[in-house]
Image (cartoon, rainbow, N blue to C red; front, side, top):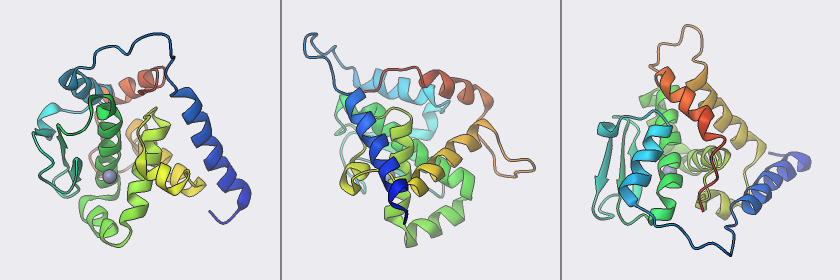
Length: 187
Ligand SMILES: [Zn+2]
């Protein structure tokens, strides 16, 4: 993070993402089905719908959140339909933090460095094509350290560390994750 060229790399990634998410002006936006977006976002990450709760209101800590201890995610319907995939992807990165670090370590880390863990989750979502990354926008880009950590988390799903005792996402999710890289980013 201290080297200027590394900071420029993060900004460059953000600029490229901003250019690719601009929707074409001519065609009208297709109708957005909240539940379909939600289920599609889970499917593409190999997630089980029962681990994900939909709540009608923002009655928790925000519009969406993850319990790092129980590894469950909640998304409220206040999330605009066009941002559902991006929000689910961000929350999925939090689940990876818990799965890869271990639940207790992730909880402890979040107590000390919540901003850093949020930024890593957003940088991971950005890498996976999310067009809604408010933490990245607020910070002005992803630093090399955040990008590297996000890649490490995502890679842990694809290639579990040898001898790792932490349960990893099953391989069908990894296959879907690769397919997702060809998907148009969400606006
Ligand atoms: Zn978050």
